[in-house]
Image (cartoon, rainbow, N blue to C red; front, side, top):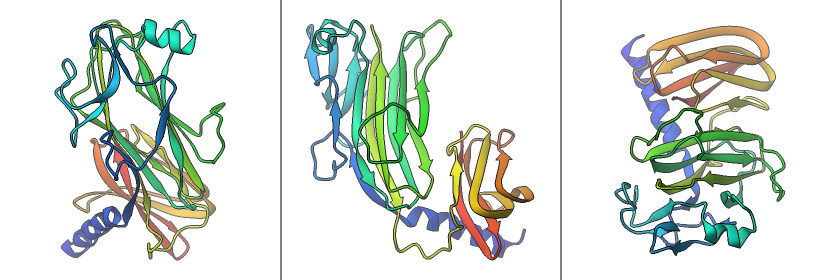
Length: 283
């Protein structure tokens, strides 16, 4: 691959970041930019001499040093306690943050946030769910990802403030999200920097009809689908080196990234005269 092609691919990568426009954000700082409203099934509180905590925290929380960005974050510790049980009437309640639906007008979007946990075990879990509609129930989800869940014994901690992100496929009118947490005991939790970004309406690139893909981020396989035939998928690293080329003549194609290192990649999907370029994240 020549230098011109490498430069073009790097420009495409930069451009893909630039065509994103922030739609919603929540950093738990009560600022004007914290415009992604949410509700909690259990009010924020600090009980038992501040050993039972679920609140906006400005400083360190146990072994969590402080917020990822800004001045505060959502902190939790010993969430399954008499206060939460009394409030919900449940013997072992989950703590749920439900974020308001965001209108995306059919554009692709990216959901991301930061999480920091210390000392979780096999009785604890954290996951988030997405639905692509404007209803109010959570009887099912269009996407669910476990942030922490294990059957192994012992205590587990994140490597600092880990970023969680997911690429929502195009073709949906709304995106809504909820975060579900269960934790009991001497463990520490932190959540910060929730964002939903969507491509701007000024995006001048042609789009394949009915195109969608996922999961993104992925540990291995990514599937591309459309209402029209997909002819070829090419994957490049950020230096412009082609690492995967797969031909087909189907409305659904998959590529396996399990053999490549974690990082950001470019995928180019060809259908007729349209070549759509997108960002892939390999965990």
